[in-house]
Length: 403
Image (cartoon, rainbow, N blue to C red; front, top):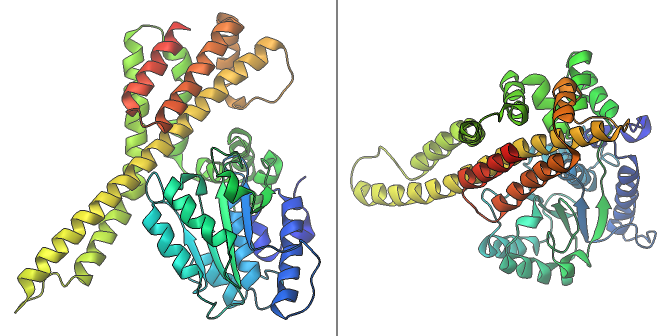
């Protein structure tokens, strides 16, 4: 079991299956506390820039946020109960700025504004913390703006970056070389199942199933365990490989995958979009009467159009993320077929689809299965290069049909 009781208390309870990372971060918190009091600390235990890497679902941003809370904690090394811990976890602490890219990238103007804010001294806590999720989405200009701050860090400021890996294509070499890397690993299914059952109150059998099919992605496991529609979408995706019997099925399957991702994106953003528009209208004086209302209305309309542009960019990202998740499931299916054909005893990504996997393994050669897997991976790459989703997915589905 990856969960160690003494490590999973307070804010660290949310960092699932990462005992080595938690030990490193807790040592850094102790060193940071000594430095804040002007006392000597162990060399190298604490630094001003950190890079959290690991596979999707490993909890990069969760670990970074827990670390930020522990740095601000007033009662210990991240007690989880004091006001500082609770406000950091809720995203409302005055000295912790969390950047979550709304669109497909983080712009240079946004990063310059962030770097400017990071230069200020903390107001209520001991540190000013800047946490950037998905830092692999930084544009070249934004990376250069961040690099200057990381090279000449302000006193009492800590930068926490999160990225899928520390490969130069994800995070520039110059930024990476100035960060201490915390490498997270894929949590074991039993650790995920324990968290779902004990912390989220999910029925143990459902928790075990969700953990076994989530690919080590904690958030995905939680969603599969609690959302019936998410389970239905997964089943629809995994029915594609054996459902491509005729060429006409290619277009049906591709359209279904893209439509499902669009629906998922709308569902994820609809309520938030409307709430943002309503807040903006109120802030801009919508519904007012008297002098100046015409000018205020024009200003409000312009602001709403700008907001709608940002919301559209966020929807595009949500759709791409939902579609990529479906492609990961598909890739896992073809990998399972290769496992069965090779006679390996390795665990399947989709154990509940073992019968379909065995049927495919009996019908396909290893070479054709590998070609299908490569087609899925090529589709994922095409989507990162802004190929229209329907075109990329239809090309992939045709390759899956052809074998």
